[in-house]
Image 1 (cartoon, helix red, strand yellow):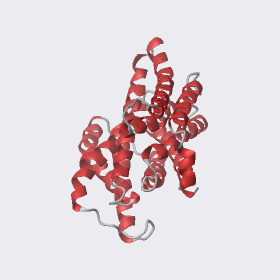
Image 2 (cartoon, rainbow, N blue to C red; image 1 turned 90 degrees about the vertical axis):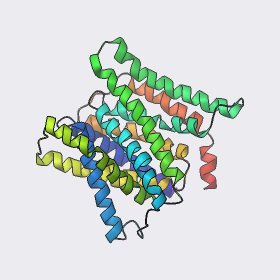
Image 3 (cartoon, one colour; image 1 turned 180 degrees about the vertical axis):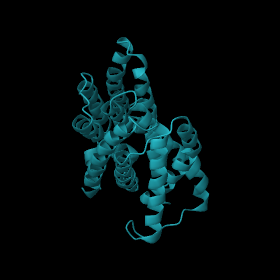
Length: 296
């Protein structure tokens, strides 16, 4: 029950963070927004882990994991974090978040190959339901000829896969590195990998630095990375990826609510039916999850 409550808190934080990102990229370049957030969040978490007991006793990173944290953790972090920030420059925040909500299905597909039995058929039927929801979001962009708007949907779809793979990576090494340490180590690495591109972007389009944007960036560092992602990676030390990803369905709802309240984003006609199909797919695909939670 405590784990489930923690995940709900994380989804609220991410909903607010997604809206904040949508607000920031209206005025700031995407890579600057993402790179500075990840770098400062990672360094701040490293300092807290080193000099406080806020996240428990400091745990050293095994030497054999360093390369893996760069090549997999850092790059996958960039894929979903920068991908989402880029996507919301083309599509509503709630739409981009809904693509991430389909990630439990991608997690299921990666955990189990198609087999000729009822259980496997149920899971792949669930994947088709979620895919139908994504098609509902995407097709009107092509049919209505709305220019480059469809690019946001493609980017968000790719980001959802990067998010799934990042979560699987966190789960795979869960016995060797604590969740908060994994968050910090992948965050600063992702920020550092992005730094050359951030410098190039700033040279092309120098960002303005009003206090309101700096304040919301600080909020995003704490809400999205330290609180939301820190809780997430900690939960993955206890739950399978596909089960934890089930709670991703709450993110687009909170994102939609915050975006409507704060950014005046209107609810599109396709959002509700698309979300219904995605949620149905996740519930069908993870039907045994209640029984498994009872065991936990």
